[in-house]
Image (cartoon, rainbow, N blue to C red; front, side, top):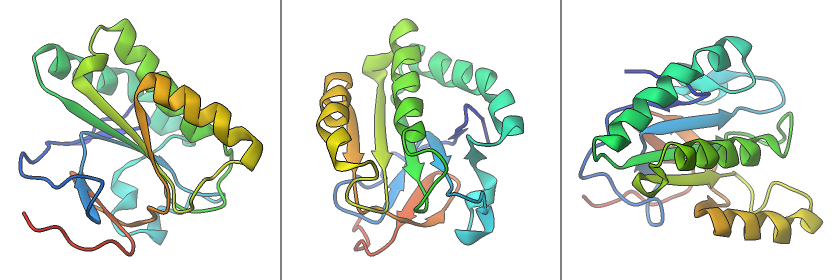
Length: 170
């Protein structure tokens, strides 16, 4: 099932591997920064997810986030992945802003403790070097994880496969 908050929400497998050790990971919400030219065909399965640079996708986002908040209020833990799919991309700060807005919305709803937010990028750090200390400090304060050098290879209904990562043993 696809939800939009410029994100997609899908059922999470309870046996899904951790982001830290594998190239396939589960998620409840996938937010994509698809690149300078929004070309969903460049990554298999990417077109099934939401491009936050697309007005149509963003317009459907409120009900999706409300559904995810309701799941969290019901006790579920939800996982958001804000993913820079390709470099370069239109607005370097945008994925960070989206992660911060998700954090703020979840805090206001009283469910931030029921959510994991991770930002991924295909490079070690996607912003200019002077911005790194400011953003890493803000992300740490908000409990938002960052995984550099995690380029997407394939976007599946509830998992993202990253390039050059060993397969997990489940």
